[in-house]
Length: 109
Image 1: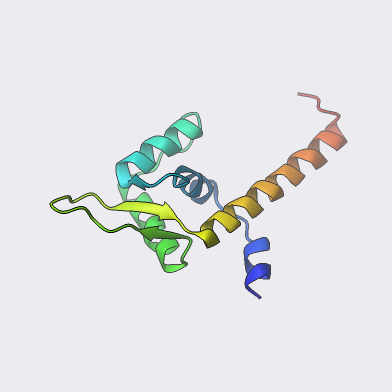
Image 2: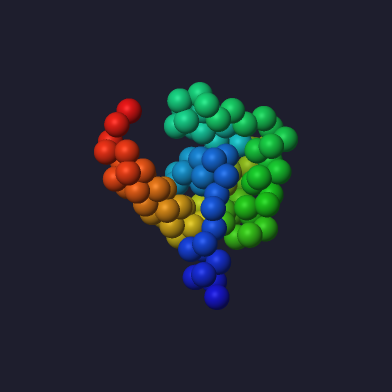
């Protein structure tokens, strides 16, 4: 059942980039910067959007909050094994979309 749930998911662009950004542990502001960089500036996350998404992904066990360092207020997050599996499935889904589109369009731009 869990396999079906992870294979049939379609991620939003913001969720995809957040998971991708968390391939290496990051704090909130670092995630925002990485997402902006990875997307070429197309995806800009506001703090409210980001922290809402982080909370939802933590609840789904796709990411986890790492223990806070003494005296630090920064919350660092990391992708979980489940989140990595979901991200890899999304990459495969996107690859299939691209392959099918190129097959039909002949790679025309």
